[in-house]
Image (spheres, rainbow, N blue to C red):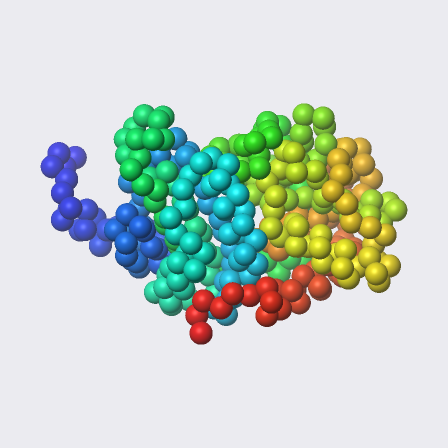
Length: 324
């Protein structure tokens, strides 16, 4: 044990300690030092930041493909709503944030990347009092973008039920960094050999997955997504619902698209189910709670919805160019 660990010791540690997972970390900006680093060892947050010891912070995750961020305005809107709800000031406007995103993406030298934005109450002490923090902190990371789920697993996803209590009301609708229930759900999925587990709300209706949203097709061909009471409003879920309403209903593939309670017994009778998320995109569920969904293969609604969503990922109106 080094009882007098210094900044130079830390620099030496970073140079020598290069775990393999760090190759997926491209670049990070921190307002703490107002600069960008490509050294994963320096991609750190102060221990006295209230995001670290109180979970007092927000985050957003979105994808960049070919130097363009997809559906960025929806992510900024959700971040701003969350900041307003928890009274967290955002001294960086959208234009300023976009300039930082662009600089981080270029520094990371990968046009395809997953961008993670954190806004915290900031450093300032170790009590629960948020007013002890002089100013908020902004951190922006560019990391490796994984393959969409259906590209890596074309047979579809296996989903089970989770017994982890769902977040309720206010806390369900704020994308805070306090993700302990979500992490425990993800662990359940891994330990049970599943791709995802699904939580239920206090009324026994479908809620959400660890970091994704859920939806079903009813026997009368309606796409249902849960009411917003006990879930985070997913940008991918809402975009997919809009695309389904715009394209699939007029084509007769769906009879409607609704936000509604989804009781577990209705979900079990669904001919198709979906997972929605920034990383997995639109994913077909082919096994639910140990039983096949439909005939156990991705269905016709998935085929149509994934087609229009893939086109939307390339639509100029949905892209914010960060790297010319």
